[in-house]
Length: 491
Image (cartoon, rainbow, N blue to C red; front, side):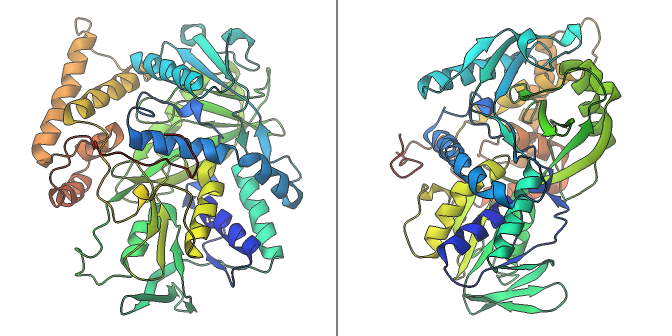
């Protein structure tokens, strides 16, 4: 169930292993799905923040990205011949991460954390003059102070990769059903198939739920409505992102990914070359109550204005050819949900947030192994029925929330009374966070994006508070040892 990157790479892996009959169910247009809107940056270190390596659990998740990155050369080699677009699937082979003065000091600490991680893992990088980045021509007041060149972190054409996978699996005889699933069918506690929205049934001995932001609600259909205790999976929240593909009308084109560090509850402002004179611009992340394919006017304004200011003034004259909106599956604790569910034969593969496209080839190998009854290659800590993973204290959570709000405040040019200091703005956001925790009555420390979401959504706050009250005693970061993230990987 699901024909995004996770579902399609898994289908390809199963077909290659000749494990039996494979059927993929999902609407061909993939509307509102994360994969069809992705910028598909193959970035590990460009995504590093101060949180990436601070705990064992975070480090294990980070090392999944490193292991996945190493697989992409082989992926592109085998998919290139099946690409129907006529364009190379790899649109960039390198990245430049810029440090400008727009996003407050969160940029500084994340930029420093990225360099520390590159040194620790002994990956290639160099610091360069920002003026030497091809295509980078920002407004003077938004110019970068520093820049790092990552020669092995590029990007792929997400829509091209999905099209190539489609061609490849169809040629191998796999069935693609241009439908959506109404419910999972089970007999007793054993899965027996799925019922489509048009009423047709597909019988199956194993069902994999890989439907992104739709996965939680679909998985619930396999359980009795009153079986909340049996299906006590942590909430997944849609993370609505917006991007645009524009054709360059003048000036020097970008030849690499150019991006800021992660900031302001999102992955940072970025541009990705898209081939044929086109460029992909992205930055936004808005956690919402319901999955939506509708773009907010505020996000359009944000992306257009700050691309002009921080990346290239000539963006103002670009011709927008495509608007893209997709919903990322964001779990309560920010970690993926990968593994068997309590109904026999039912498997969940979701919660990858911004890492789904990048990690899809690796996760496909792992899930295929488990479907065949073999040991998986990633840590079992991501099992879907687990309690939320703890990586921070309440005080740390509030401090993160304040830093992200300050980053968003200064990037968007928000105004305050002339006599109001940054410390007073910080106190305002700190008080908001403290009040939110008091109202929720929980002892689990939320990530900054989740805290921002529950602060503004009554529906989301009630849902998350109900779940966390059933899982008291999670306030302190977990101290127990955690095994290596990849078989044979480092601690």
